[in-house]
Image 1 (cartoon, helix red, strand yellow):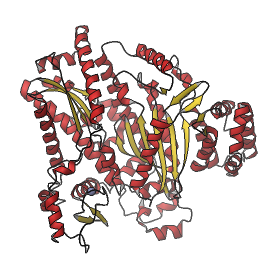
Image 2 (cartoon, protein in one colour):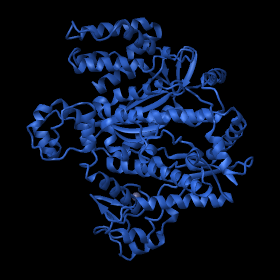
Image 3 (cartoon, protein in one colour):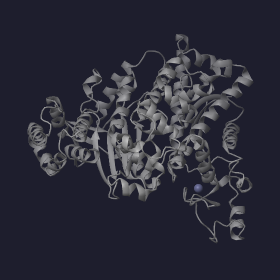
Image 4 (cartoon, protein in one colour):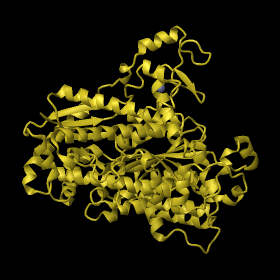
Length: 634
Ligand SMILES: [Zn+2]
């Protein structure tokens, strides 16, 4: 029998965010990425062995497209000269970027559905076993084996299967899917596309089912050993829950964290993989980064013996910043505070999600979700006409190819903005950035979509959270997760006579423990005929200009207070006259300009502010949030 299979690691989010350190987060992303790729690779290998389909077997993985997938081509050593030249220093760590999406759709053959599901699970457990570091875990390996932490994956996917009964030979299907250019294959594409829709429906239902990989573990034995005192975490008798996942009993302690078997494996993996590379940057590294770059002269005089963390070195190389000065990180905190009174304490986490990606792959995109159904239909029709011609599967493959290229764009943008990647799957992304660069990076990530034929019409929902470096990482991630969810599922903004959802930026400020947020839509108009008229990110570009004007001393800092004091007034004024808003802002800006001869904002920028001031986001006013942003980032 021939089947189409959908594998969705939907618990990946919590597996990644259950972290105490940035290196835990990296390890969580990497393990998820690796498992997904390992499974894909296994499927191809098995097909090749069974039906000798040679290199066309790869095409049976429908999503993601493997052909130009960076994670895949790096491992196959097939990276082309152009990408090599372009990514240059970034490729030094090529194996360590979690850039394979934790979702798969593929075609394979098997006798029976359930057998197929079990086979897939077995393969995943096997892939996970391969990752376990026997040497680094030698003190624990007996315990880990005993309770089955090493033999079962902590992230179990939902698996959905649909039969492709129209075909009986897998080699024929491999050939058909490898020749999408051939007009004769149109029927095949129509049939396969219908099945993909069915598969997607099944996956939606499956998602609701709770998965408990903990059931694989020998919890009975573990509990017995804890009760009898065989396992004793430090001097504590009885249970101590894992401080990373909060689900399982801890079996040991590592750098002052109590950890269960799975979280211990994750922790050790992150530490081991980065050990020889100077370690993974910490939250305080990221809070300090810009400060150190800007004060490089002062820092050079400090001790120099500490190795530079490789990821930070790459940021330096990519941006051509002189290398020698990274010693200060080893000074203890009290010493830092004594010497540098103005040291920064916050860093930013950035998350970007492609809007309605699942729908996009079913060729029913919601570039932005309109509340009005007729407008939605009209736009969908227009969009379809804009797609490259050919069958539906060809279109899907084309979108996936663009997603793979977007990964390369995003990776480059991250390093160019002094940030480090945690996870980049194309449709979603997580990165850590210095506060000073976070807004610029968010704008860039949104604009990256504009480089692609299909994706340029789509939207991206992006969230930034600013946190103190000592604030628990896990809570920051949870807040960010909720903020993005709000952006994607709840938020509605109104302009002219339209009601639109998604495609916005939300910034949550958690620097002082009091949560405050600001929301700015990325687009002002939505024009499919000439997308350049959409002015994506135009208001944020203006914000960025003002922020850099303040940082460079062109405007005095009192500008922020003068604008802030009139926030509510701007909102009421915008209801009467948008022109009055822009004139008043212009006046305040001019009053606060210290260097009169340097021009900063142009007439068009004030017009942009005026246009956006009309938009209402739920009961919020965009102009008030705009002023908040200026204060947080300048
Ligand atoms: Zn745990």
